[in-house]
Image (tube, rainbow, N blue to C red):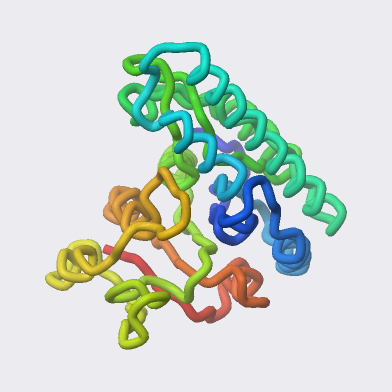
Length: 271
């Protein structure tokens, strides 16, 4: 994808567990959102693309109406599809407003108006609005969303899958994933105190399968698979030369350091 004179931007994915309280429906974590907005502003990246997850805005409705299974019939499910999209628009607006108040020229873009899937995988993704914002010096802000699907009516397009697709199509080399733990662990650190953090994870290494088998999905309402699915989503991007840094975005300074290329505690996923 041609960016003209622009360098491919790094991508910052902010997880739903960071920007919302996942155990409280439609409750944004305003303190974290505002702090992260200031960190992004202070880091002053030459260009940037932000994607955020759904957390307590998108996941409860997607689960209640079984949207990940596709359209099974009935007005109630279609109403759930609409409600999920409306909730995600609301969260996107909150994040974009906070970024602009911090001095980041953020522009919200509706994912469901740009992407169409087929059996849950991205079939088409209109990048013209994204490129237009980048060329103006703005920061596009997209999000995981409920989108139309050519085979099953509709599907959930996760922020992780969207981030990886954008990175590949734009030729980006770096993807920073802000989550609610310090990185990838050998097992769930919230359950097992003896779990060890993996500082570097080689997706083609001998330990990859063993580590992946120890990772569990999210314990909160999450229709997109949690940490294990994140690793699987970024594998293709990493295999093609990209690097992924997974950091705890709830700890002040981590995202700012990562954007500046400084050492930030986390897991580096590479090939």
